[in-house]
Image 1 (cartoon, rainbow, N blue to C red):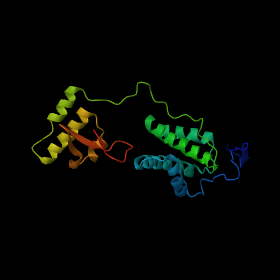
Image 2 (tube, rainbow, N blue to C red; image 1 turned 135 degrees about the vertical axis):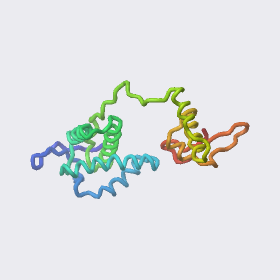
Image 3 (cartoon, one colour; image 1 turned 60 degrees about the vertical axis):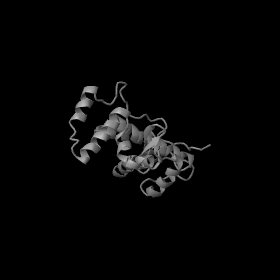
Image 4 (tube, one colour; image 1 turned 90 degrees about the vertical axis):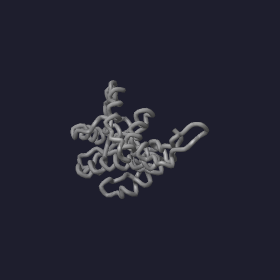
Length: 202
């Protein structure tokens, strides 16, 4: 059980301390902190890269604001800052999730209290959804591709896979010729999906 000491006040700023090992985010080795945090999240290389990018924005924000000991209000102000800077709700949500996960780890390691525990992310509308192509639009996209060239044939094959199989852009771009294999009477494509290291049958 982590013992969180009462909030104390330093230079007019409210600070929550945890034991005697409170971090100073202006003087700590952030790269070293992140490397230890990576072990905690135990994610794929893509997941780690996403967390690194998201947390980098948080650390830049604190540095620019001169914040050494953030509290829950700091996280809320950061969320509002992201909104004001024009970030999409889904992007803000990802950034806040990264901050929440980071402080889960700092509390578990008794480095800093989980100041983001009760901070909500961005509101994403219930009607939020990505636009999709109608069958007529999809057909026109394929018809407009010049298949007289090798690149055109490749582009047609990639788009056809995305439209008919629901593959993501990253999954198609990672696919190679040798990933097309025969399984019994069927021809299958092995793809490397989001968050996966190995390619799997599709």
